[in-house]
Every structure is written in C-alpha cells, then in structure tokens.
Image 1 (tube, rainbow, N blue to C red):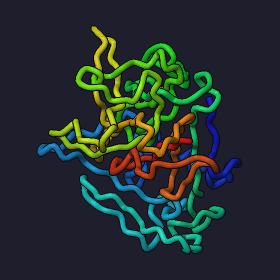
Image 2 (image 1 turned 120 degrees about the vertical axis):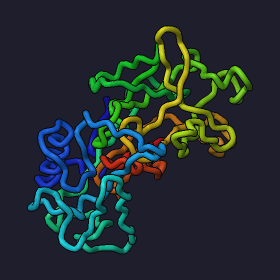
Image 3 (image 1 turned 90 degrees about the horizontal axis):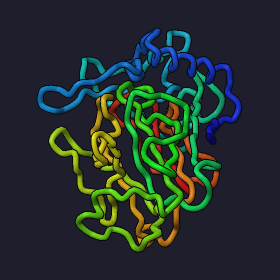
Image 4 (image 1 turned 90 degrees about the vertical axis):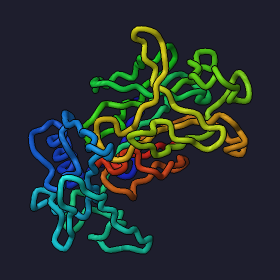
Length: 303
C-alpha cells in the first residue's frame, strides 16, 4: 500500500503530537474541545426534519496546543448542538504563522499542518483505472483486499476519518474484463466502448429525501455492491453515520469530459488543514468529502 505524508515527509514533534491527539480522540480516550473530531463509535442521527447535525471544522493552526488544542485566543467557536462550519478565509499572500494559510513550520502553538496521501500506485497490477466502487462497514483492517469482487483493490483511507460514522473506503479496478457493471447498464449505454477508462470524478449534495442527486452529463454513481442475499447495487452517502452534508460520488468514463486524458492512478488526501496539497504531478478534486461533518479534510486526487 502506497501511503506517505504528502506535504511534510518527516513529521515534526508538533505534527506527531497532533496525530496522537487525533488518534486518542478517535479511540474515545479523550474529547476534542472544539468538537471537530469524535470517537469512531460516534453515530450522528438525523434531526427530526431530516437535517443532520453539523460539526465545526478549523485549520489546525487556529488551535492552541498548550490548551489541549482548544481554539487559540481571539477565535470564536460556534455553540449549540447543531453548529456551522468554521471556515476561515484563505489569502494566498498570508505569511502570518498564526494565519489559516500558513504552510511553514509549526507556529502559534499550533499542531503543525500535516497530510497523509494513500494512493493506488504499485497496487492492483498496472495500467489505467477502469472502475471505482465503494465499500462500507465496521472493519478498519489495513488489508487492501476488497470485498467488492475479483480485481478490485481497496485504498486503506477511511473517508470518514475523524468524524465517527461508518468506515467507508474507495476501491479501484485496473482489469476491464473484471469490471462489475452497475445498474446504469440496465437502462442505457453510458460509456464509449468495452474497455472504458476512468476520466473524471465528482460529488453532488443530496438530502434526507434525495439520495439520488443528479450529476453532470456522462457521470454515473460509484456503487456499493451488496452480496447478501444476492448481488445488487446501492448508493452510499460519504458521510454515512457522521452527520454533516449528504454527499454522493460519481465517476465518468467519457474521454470528451477530460479532453481525452485518462486516469491511471487515484489517491485519497487527508489532513488537518484545507491548504493541504498532493505531491507534484497529481490533481486534486477540491471538495471536502467530509464536508460539515468535522473530522479530517479529505480530498480525491488523480493523475
């Protein structure tokens, strides 16, 4: 499994301390004073009107490590059980070590910006990516073996990291002959040929009453296969059990969308700042897959 720190190859003491804090919160040993990170056993119920509770999300450099990672002086946290996202404005010329866009060494008593990048590199054989699927469950096994089907490989990067809820993982397939066709094949011919290659990814927001938001043309759901009792397909909210926005993922295999650029690697970037970026040569889909649910900032990447 290819997994490494994308922005800072060597963790500083401040980054290591922050990671220990997040891990202890996720194990339920301590609580996050801001309320952004929660124990993995936390399941967020829907409110009576179907609107789920939201959690705050702040850049790590707005926290004070000397005060248990509470917000540093001068910052105001939202209050109440249903909170709004705390999203600090990002200014490209912000060189303030206490500012949300600062990417230098740890400052302002913060925990230090870090990110983890889990990729498909050197996994699942070679060649282009032909399909994506999702798996959901309570299993946090580090195995890359997927329960989707033959040829599918799991990226060990929980899409609910730090936000509680279900364990959700992205799986990919490089062998065109082993692609499991979703239900879209029952009503039209969505792709351009028998050896379709992944060309694009996107997410759309749904709601309590709408689990089938409409994607852009040529995009189709990234399905969750269920083998019990018979094989069938389902959509999954990427924030399942974690609260926040209802987020659904889609893939496209039409080369026109990407100007005939094909995807041969996919990755999941997660970290404690909205400023994190993947390594050189990778592109990022800049929409947080954990939006409004607290936890890590999580992004889909590709090349």
